[in-house]
Length: 548
Image 1 (tube, rainbow, N blue to C red):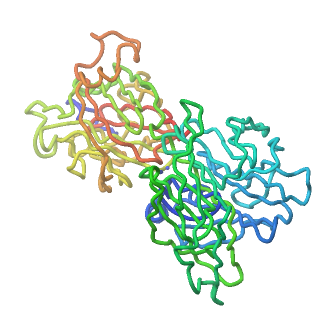
Image 2 (cartoon, one colour):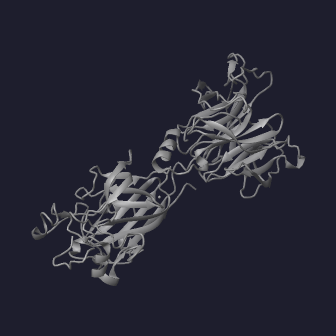
Image 3 (spheres, rainbow, N blue to C red):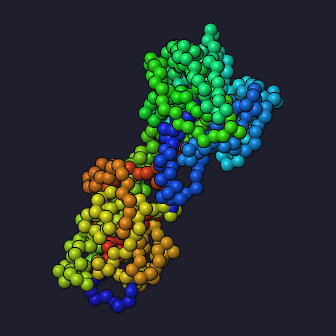
């Protein structure tokens, strides 16, 4: 809202978190679920990334390896990725939090000098790039620790190893003279589970397939292979047997992985692309079968000896945090009443919670204008409030409706996605163009981290400032919470220090809100709000930490 008289000039995410598949080095997807991935395609039409796929390696014959890519968003379509690597004997594979794929070889390599080698895998072409020897003859499994991103593995007849990327020579952490099939970290990154098949006095069951690659019969429960389950405890640096039991009835275990709910999921050998899965009780080894997800496959591609599968390692259970980021606006760039001045913005991330603080001349309920400025053709409802808070991640926008009396197109307070943003200056008796505001204020005008004029906003567009939600989709379970000044100070907010000023120069109102941020709300952003009359605006340019 402007004060009379006024010149008549015009004013670009975030398991498959729990996708379960089988084989030697199975890693559950800790990223988008199939339904979420489909929604992301529909909503954002973004191209798929490494973390949208499951990657694997099929070991035909003794040592012929083929990198695979499985698409959980499209009926688990499985396809070869890149050339076949004959004689490479790839036995292990996993994917880091950043979508980097690593693979390692066994000891049946055609080139004997490449036994126990570590590679990276190009997620688009399947091309292998040598990192170098691990110093061990055969690597049976790989697993990234979600707490710190370190890469661990199992070396046959040597024991538990840790690989200090980007170097390849591994450190032996716990010696153990045996062969483990696979290993997986728990979701906290504190315990590493390891499974060993015990083949003494046990015969793996024969499996018969029909012409269309479907099992004609399943082995009887008596055809068991005994197993041991171990756990490596980070705090005590010890490897302990958890249980020694018959925990399978479909042949030897080829994979073990931690599910989102903390249960261990097992995969079995020779399942002919029809994963046979079960959860295992970590204390008793009791087995509970799971429903089988089904791959899309043809008789020409019988990938029935998948040695390893991997997806992006999960983000930290406690996501990364950052301290307060502040943006200081000019304290003298409001047109009209001082109540319409915006002084400062601040943003802080605590785990997966985003906290926003505002210092202004009005509270979140807005400001009731003098009687002579209220009514038809002026401030229609007699109240001018802060607009919705917009966050723009390289074109992917979110908006927070936090002011209950603003002229937003939504009513429920909280976080919204896919907002169509509209101008509300007309109903608030405001500047119809941004350059008119700039003309009045002159060189004193800023939007904190965005200068004026700028190319981000259309400076001379007529009532088209993207300032409030027109329509949008409410983000479910956003845990939105309005915060008082006391709440914010308890979280470490200090506008005086952050804006390098004194209390008596700040605005009289400090308030804010918090919400659980979506997984894709990361990296560089521009965030802003205006007063509903565009008599002032403020923006902050910052960066939210990714999963690292």
